[in-house]
Amino acid sequence: MRALDIIGTAMTNTLRSKTRTLLTVLAIFVGAFTLTLTSGLGTGINRYIDDTVAGIGASDVMTVTKDSGAQTDGGFGSSDGPVEYDPDAVPAGQGQAAPGMSSTTTALTPEDLDELARVPGVLRVEPTRSITVDYAQHSDGVRYTVSVGSLVPGQTVQLAAGEVPDDSEDLEVVIPIDYVDAFGFASVEDALGQDLTIALSDGVRTQHTVTATVTGVAEEALAGAGSSLIPNDALTEELWDLQNTGVPEDQQYRYASASAWYDPDASEEDVEALKSALDEAGFTGTTVADQLGAFRTVIDAIVLVLNAFAAIALLAASFGIVNTLYMSVQERTRDIGLMKAMGLGSGRVFALFSLEAVFIGLLGSLIGAGAAIAIGTAISEALSTSLFSDLPGLTVIAFDPLTVGGMAIVVMGIAFLAGTLPAARAARKDPVVALRYE
Image 1 (cartoon, rainbow, N blue to C red):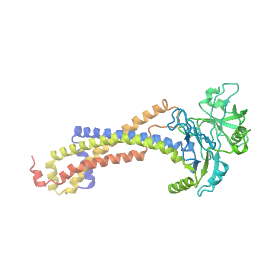
Image 2: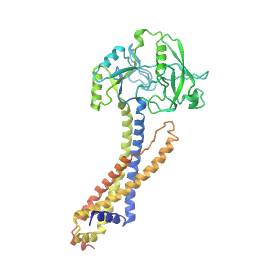
Image 3: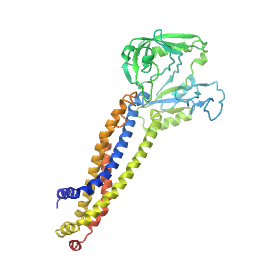
Image 4: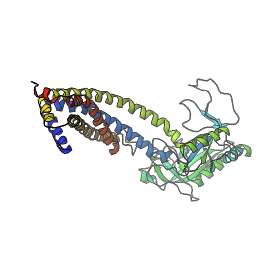
């Protein structure tokens, strides 16, 4: 019997007892469906995180601070009690402290930046200017508090309309989409080209106002600068100078963090070596991958737990395959004896029954994966237009063909392993004894 004949015979034999095969396939279907759906969940969310990497920063830039971590300076929720005043501390920025707590870090001075630039592996250093404004207002409308962000080279922002401010000398700004209605604009397109008044206080509490032109509206994003005003370099320089008016010169150049560029072709070992060098010099370096690590760890842990349930379902299904094939071997004992009496070797008998198990696994994985893709896609589309409509570009459940194909191969592998015991039993049968079997 040729290989193609064995495959064809295995498929025919699988369908001889349709009800029994269908029940076994359904058991595999549950595991394959769950495994495909949970894998799609992990793929969709991790893909969204990868897409937002450009919103966090360039991959060859490291955020450097003076200390290894921010300090919590007392207040509600502080577990370490009040923190002693540090004249060298500056605000660490948003997102670095727990709710109800403020965060500070030791300021970077021009001397620190020079020392940072001398660390081996650092190609270029630029300080991160922190600007705090009092309010922003359009025309004579309501004044709203708002934070000011910045873009480093390589960083992008998802825009609902318009464009990122250029390097011209005109004062230009991108506003968050949440502020479109608040500022009184009829739509995101209506906001483009309009004037926005930004007020801030200097070192002697004198308030200044600056008028900038809105060139874009930023979408909300999982991470990045989508919730802050994004000024161009000219506006940043203007606000920075006004903010430092009246501040002693030796107190003007104090930065919470700096961006350090390194070789874009650097390996993971090179990046770790650079972090070690920064640590020895008294700095702490954080890459984009470090910032994404926490997101990925949580998501991968959730997907792993869900996949464990799918693995349990597949394990239960494998016992169904063993039972189905054992019964098939028992029912076809005389057929096995006849095939071996006509010269079919034990290896081919083993292959015949093993292929029946693989075929059952293939049917279960194809039906399960197909159903998971259809249902998962429908759920994802429904969520993207309702619950997650504020996160453009997010596909909650996405399917990677290679991952789905790999899952099907894994399921067939499990089915093959489950079928080896009854297949080995069939292969060991003595043809004379088998032909006498009643």
